[in-house]
Length: 375
Image 1 (cartoon, rainbow, N blue to C red):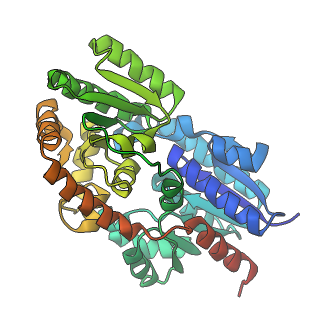
Image 2 (cartoon, rainbow, N blue to C red):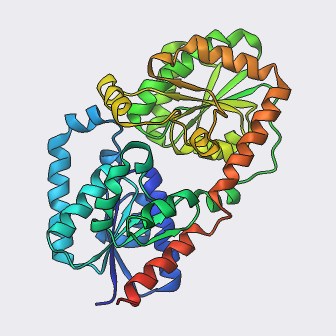
C-alpha cells in the first residue's frame, strides 16, 4: 500500500480547505490514498474512505457542544479506532481545534506512529497561549495562516511553515467585474444553522427598520437547506419583496453590495479581501459567551480588527447586537461615500496580510517533505 493520509475536518470551511489540500497533494503524489472525516468536497476527491459528517459536526459554542457531548464522544472514539485500524502515514487535522487537538493528544499519548499535522493553526494566541508547548509535544508540523504565528509556534519547538491563507486563491478566482450597487445592502448570517437562527432574525429586523429608505437587501445562503430556512424566516416576518435570499453567491454579493452585515468568522476576511465595508455581528448562547470572556484576552473578536491592531470595522457583540444600532450603522454608511471609501481602503490593506496565494501548494510540499525525508 502507498502513502495514506487521514484527514479530519468538521465544518464546511474545513471541507473546502481540506479538498484544496487533497488536490494539491494528488497533483504531486497521484498514488497517495486519502481517508477520514470531512464534507462533500473532500469525499468527492477521497472517495468512500472519506465520510461526510460536517452537517452534524459543525456546532458553534461551548454550550452547544456540551448539549451533544455524548454524540461527540462516540465520534471521537470511533475516529481513534479507525485511525488505529488504518494505520495511516499521516493524520492531517484541518482546523476544528476543539475536536482535533484532543485527537492529536490522544493519538500521541496512545503511541500512534503516524505523523500528526495541523493544517490551519488554531488561534491559541487569542485564548490560550499556554497550550502551545503542549501542542508542540502532540504535533509534528504546524501549517499556519499568518506570519506572526510562525515564531510563536517555533519558539515552542514545533516545526512550522507559514503557507499564507488558502482563501486567497479561491477569492481571487471568484473576482468579478462588478460595480457596487448604489442601494444594495448585503446580509451574511453565517454557514451554520445555529448562526442563521441567531443572526438572521436580527438582520431581518434591521432591514424592516430601513425598509422605507429606498435600499434593497440581499442575503447570502451557504446551502440549499439554509436558503429554505432563511426564506421561511423572510416569509414569517412579512418582508417578501424587501429581503431577497440567494444561495451560493456569497462572494459575488460581497463585490456588488454597497455595504454589509457579516457574521463573525471566515466571511469577515472574505469581505475584507473584496473591500466591502461592513459591520460584524456575533451572538452565541450566553454560557458560551461568558466562558469566552473569561479565557479570551483580546480587545476585538473580529480577525480583521485583530490583524490590523485597531478597530477597522465596528463589532456588535452579544447584548450589543441590536437591530436599531446595526440599522443606524447601515444608514450612516449608505449616506457617507467618503467613509465607505476610507473603510474599503483599510480593509484591503489588512487583507494584504493574508499572503499572495498558493497556500495549499506550499502546505502540500511541506507535508511531502515531512513524510518522505524522515530523520
